[in-house]
Amino acid sequence: MMQPITAKELEYLVDSMSNEDLLMKQCAVTAATASNEALRQQCLQLQHMHQQHYDALLHALQQHQQMAPTQPQQ
Image (cartoon, rainbow, N blue to C red):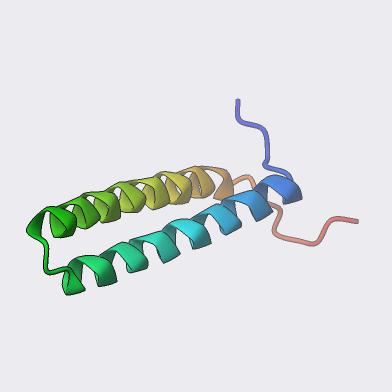
């Protein structure tokens, strides 16, 4: 049985998702502006990798969503 995530773990997930999102955007911009095809391809691969990381973090968060309290804890 899964244990509820702590507030600290939630903060870590949110920060990690934000970082992955930023990295995806940076890779996309670099790929779009790169004149070197090898660099462009590498950036696209990195963008895909960061998308997979983001998706994995989102999935982990969604798995715990059902366990989250609906009311503030006392």
